[in-house]
Image 1 (cartoon, rainbow, N blue to C red):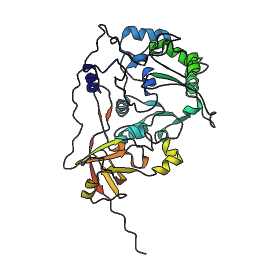
Image 2 (cartoon, rainbow, N blue to C red):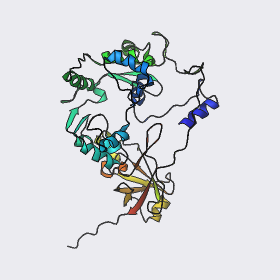
Image 3 (cartoon, helix red, strand yellow):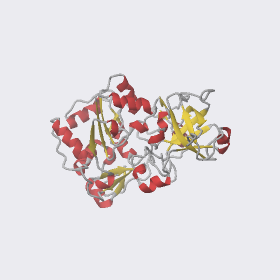
Image 4 (cartoon, one colour):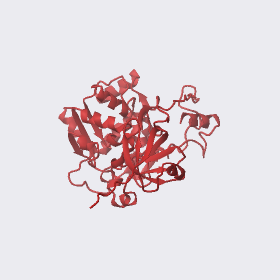
Amino acid sequence: ARCLIALSMITGQVGRPGTGLHPLRGQNNVQGASDAGLIPFVFPDYKSVEADDVRGTYEKLWNAELDAKKGLTVVEIMDAVHADIIKGIYIMGENPAMSDPDALHARHGLAKLEHLVVQDIFLTETAFLADVVLPASAFPEKAGTFTNTNRQVQMARPALSLYGDTLQDWWILQELANRLDLGWAYTGPADIYAEMAITMHSLDNISWDRLERENAVTYPCDGPDQPGNDIIFTDGYPTANGRAKMVPASLTPPGELPDASFPMILTTGRMLEHWHTGAMTRRSTTLDLLEPEAVASMNPYQMGQYGCGPGDTIRVSSRRGDILIKVRADTDVPDGMIFIPFCFHEAAANILTNPQLDPVGKIPEFKFCAVKVEKVEPKMQAAE
């Protein structure tokens, strides 16, 4: 990503129509959540938690002392659990038992906790390990905003009533806060958005009322009656001298390479029919009928080397574990590589992946680890 950003700046592909980079984020509202400070080392609008003046502003607003140290990312949290530093976790809308690298390490960590709370819309693999499960509501059942990577702040309105005993996420959190004597008094998402707007200059001139009228507004926005700026950095960058800062990118070698014991490369990802860990899509009858069972993809030539045909069962092993999965032919997969989606709980790809982190983004190395592939012979039926 840093190399692409640098290349765009060097070649002048920024700040003009038809230029710029548009990252494809992992899911909806990653941009909005990041803008709002859902990153363990920044406050809203990406202000460092280590900056005394910034932290003081938030301490005054929230009437609380805030930690000056950077927080931990997901993989680092699991390491801290195993080190007996973290004893309890509250998880909202996340399924680390499936999505973390070296998933057995993550599952053992979750099981080791003294107290685990999961707030989600389904009983996920992570929720099965929880001491308390709180029934959250799905996005069609609640109001709020989504911000996409085009910087459009979009109003979302409930299309359905709350189902059964489900509750609004903000209401659950407020009830917990008030049981801790924190005195929260939000009446709904509009109040929460108003507080966000105080802390986030990116929301300047984008009020809740305006979003209700216009449905979506792009930030930054220069006035309450002005359209948002579709193109940014036309007159420079938000730095002291107005110039962009070129940041070098150093190559981080893979955590492990193929060898005689593990000669193949595993890469993981998503598939069209199932999203992320499958918590929602595998509960959709239509989507699960399209892709009902765990499947890996290999090049047909590579399959022939292993004596495999489409639909055969293979065992894929790494230094961390192994899974059984059916294989299909895919000419888009290079020789020496196998692709496995991470949505199938019965053949969880992340049991195999390694937990090495990118030193800057702290993103695990989901796309590269060494594995061994073996064909599993069908069990012979016992003679009658």
